[in-house]
Image (cartoon, rainbow, N blue to C red; front, top):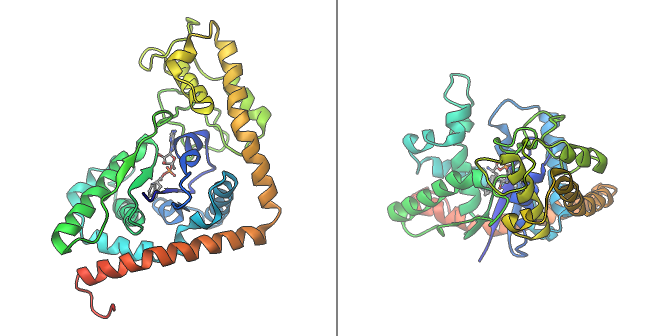
Amino acid sequence: MTSLSGITPSGRLTLGNYLGALSRFTDPDGFFFVANLHAMTTKHDPRRLATLTRECATLMLAAGIPPGAVFVQSDVPTHAQLAYLLECTSYVGELSRMIQYKEKGGRPMTRASLFTYPCLMAADILLYGAQRVPVGGDQDQHVELARDVAVRFNREYGDTFVVPELHKAALATRIKDLANPTAKMNKSDADDAVGTIRLLDPPDVIRRQIMRAVTDSDNEVRHDEAAKPGVTNLLEILAACTGGDPAQLALGYSSYGDLKRDVADAVLAVIEPLQKEYARLATDPGAIDGLLAQGRDRALAASEPRLQAAMRAMGLAGCA
Ligand code: TYM
């Protein structure tokens, strides 16, 4: 069962990206990529995009994804090619219902690509016949759309695409901002946002952020999303880092201070080895180029036949 997932380099990666996605990119036969084309749906700075793309790719390699499985989306032109065919298979009605478009789009100066973005994401998934798509909870609607588009394409033009499944994590599907625990931790927030843990920030900064996380005033450690969002978020982070159950873990604590100290230790136990490996890889840019070229070649070879099949099915001339 092939898995596929991507990360958009629209900011420096966070603990949410790691626990909700990156740490689950474990399929040795999978395809995991830096979704840099997706980072251009809102106003962007080309130099920053190039830097963030490289940082994201290096982190993916540092996280232990097998080298041949990691690539940069724009290196593999089949993604943009299939996206156009899927724009011709999607409806304005369904695209305008996407939460991200409703939140950020709909204005005269909204980039057209923000509207069609879910078609590119569907292309990413459908090109490889991916059945499993390990993502955090905020991507469910996009994966659902990819499913709908695959079913519609197969019905209208003949069986071409595998219909993907969501691959939801049991835990950490929506890590919250430590300073505002009802909002998602978001890599697009300001670089110095105190509630956002960045994977490459110094360990003492990360520890301080966790020790200052917003909780509440009754000092009772309990897993209760509605009444205690801050404490619940800390318990979920602890559970995701250590493999425990958040409600069970709560029973072991009688103070917020002890909980925060253990969360900081658990987060750093995950992040520090990742940072060490990142630093080691970053000393050899030529080797990173080589690994990404390997990933690109494998992705091209795997995706080309399905693009050709889709073109033939749609009646495009000149494709053998
Ligand atoms: P992106 O870059 O916003 O996020 C990358 C992955 O991290 C997950 N995530 C979180 N999980 C838990 N808690 C959080 N606070 C949190 N924040 C982010 C996201 O759910 C995602 O899995 N459109 C996608 C990238 C993409 C993609 C794809 C994914 C492009 N093509 C094809 C899967 C398949 C995005 O912008 O994710």
